[in-house]
Amino acid sequence: AATFTTVLVEADTVQRNFFCQYLWGRKHAVLPATTWRDVLTMLSSSPVDMLIIDPEAVIDENVMLSMDDKSQSPLELLRQYTQRAVVVLTSESFDDDTVAAHAAEGVLALAKPCSAPRMHLVVEKAERQVLAAREEVEKIKELRKT
Image (tube, rainbow, N blue to C red):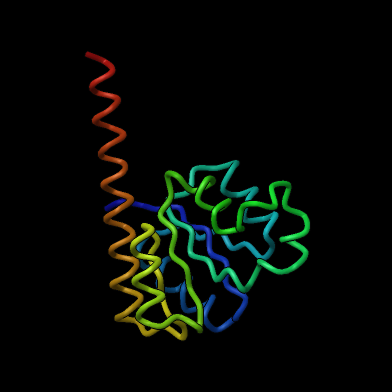
């Protein structure tokens, strides 16, 4: 069975506990983050397979003001840090159109409060993407050997 390293950013205690219980049951090492700096530090210092984040939990005006490159949004910056990780955005304000728009950008979206079946579908899809990326890396390594 595969294992995964997942950074979890969720301000709501009930939702965070729900996510953790579920992810632990699926063999995820869960790294909780509570600040934008924590998120960027974890993503840059250790291999992360998945980032599950409610942007509203950590992105505020202070983050926007502290960013070096004001032309980028925090989500664009996240994409640079997570080129190898699957991003799952969570929010209470998602509707079907928002979920579809994020999917078109290669980002999974999960409306909150999330049900166990909905979470299962999104996490399973994210895990498949991680495993496919790992296989691709292995193929590239094999090709370089020859």
